Structures are given as structure tokens and as C-alpha cells.
Length: 283
Image (cartoon, rainbow, N blue to C red; front, top):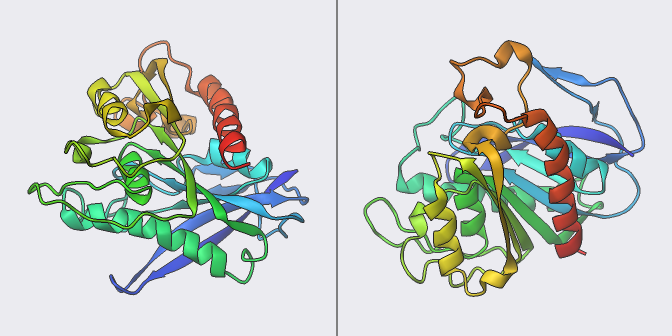
């Protein structure tokens, strides 16, 4: 099986904008890859989708991220039978960050995940190929906050004001990578999150330190549903796909790992770990 790709532009009428998503999916057609700036993806643009119906995975990036930075495990999942949509959160991405630190960002992020699932289910190309009630969200850092909000978490705004968000019943599993959970400090903020969760944290992480993972374990109704491990030697950005050599330097923090950590080797294992979790929980 190979990996096909299509770019979607999703309309957000409330903000009067459109935001992009890169959708990867299984196909029988292979190619030599497509370049996006300095990053090349081994995918086939606009290839026909393989026969069958496939679960949905939405990837929510961290603060200031993009829809391309988790390409290694996104492609691995697509190759093995998932339709994977990586969206770029408006106002909180590498090009613009005017929503960062605001209540609007806390509300908009989970809404855009739901809108991405809606768009896949309604799209003339994907509607016949998705399993709309078998979806998962993978979230890194601020994307972890987002995934929990989609699953029924009730965060608090910077002012302390509770934010009531509706869960998306189509989402049946979460994979959280170094999740940012500080908005869920109220004792009952995660009591409605009753989904299987894979949570991976980094041993050397000053952005989302260990207490944030413990906060989640303390607040979900059944911590036995959480598969949790700390990745030895990893840093906060180690969950991002390896960057090309020209982009890997000390002045670009997302490209950097703690000394001795092999990001490329880790990502060859990360895709398999995510795939095994999703196969188990979305079967």
C-alpha cells in the first residue's frame, strides 16, 4: 500500500476564514514524492483512494506548528489503513499567532478538529471512504489540550472562567504526545473524558513537565484507560518529525533534541506504537 494526499481548505464561517488540512490516505498508486519547500513527502498527490472504508485520524499540532511537521507517523498510519488529516490551526501556527494565550484559542482549536471531521465526512472524495463513527485525535503539546477538549474536557480560560465545550461522540481514542494540560487544573475538568488514551511524555521536557501528565492521570475517571510511558532521553520537540539537514540547527529549537537522542530512530518506532494503539482501540 502507498500513501495518497489531498489538500483541503475548510471553511470557518464564524471566523470568516478558511484553514488548510493535509489529508493522507491509503492508495494503490505510488510516486517519487512531493516537495513542500525543503520538506519532501513520499506521497502521491490526488491519487485515488484504495477500496474500502477507513477510520479517521485528526492531528492537532502544538503552539506555532503546522500541518506538515508530523508527516512521518501520519504517512505510516495512512499506509496502514487510516485517513489522516493534519490541520493548521488558524491564529496559532507558524505563520500567525494572534490567538495564542486567548480564550478564543481554547475554544477555536477543538472546534476546528470537529470541523475537520465534518469536512471529511461531507467531502465528495472522502465521504464514501471514511468510517465517520471511528475517529481518533493525536495531539502534541497544545494539540494535547485540544484532543482532551474534543473528548469532553472542560478547560478554564486564563481568567479562570470555565469553558463548556461539547464532546464529539465520533472520537473514540486519543493519543497525547507531551500534552499541555494546565487548563484542566479544576478537579472535575476531565471527568467526562472516558476514552482510551495513549500518553507519551519526554524525559527532558521543560515545556510540559511531568506534573502535567500526572494531572491528567489524577483527573480522568478511570486511569486504567491510559497507556502511559515516558520516552527516555527525549525532549519536548522530539515528537516532531525530523527536519531536513538545512533546517536542523541550534537556532531552530523544534529541530533540536537532548544530547544523544536519535529522533529519526524514535520516529521509526513511534509510527508503529501509534498504529498498534489505534488498531486496538478503533477496531
